[in-house]
Length: 158
Image (cartoon, rainbow, N blue to C red; front, top):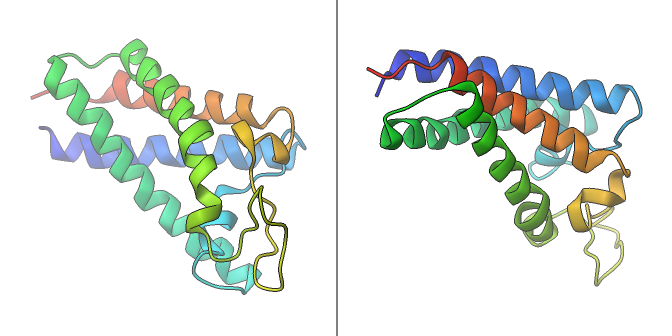
């Protein structure tokens, strides 16, 4: 495994993914902020939640990029299209299993079955994260495909 390439391109791909997701939120395509959702798992303070969530999201990006790199190593091939294909699978996982289980993991998020409480004020994402906007699944898909394409296109096997 090429550790230097993994760390550099995993970080760079995560920055681009986060930029796409934040840009989509800023443009009104989605109401979802992954860093904010992650950060509120650790604190109630909105400003700190964004900062902590950004750090957690960057670490998650490196961990997930390691999965991509593991697949490249296993297949003895890294390319933009293979990375993009893995990105489609990653986005499908995030949109279905990830968003479905998030309310059960998040101490401040309501669930589909039980509405908000004093402690659980965040809206649950719902199926395909559609509670955060109709274009949310598209922005998640695009972000993860670009993440994978960048990682696969620039990661070099040893």
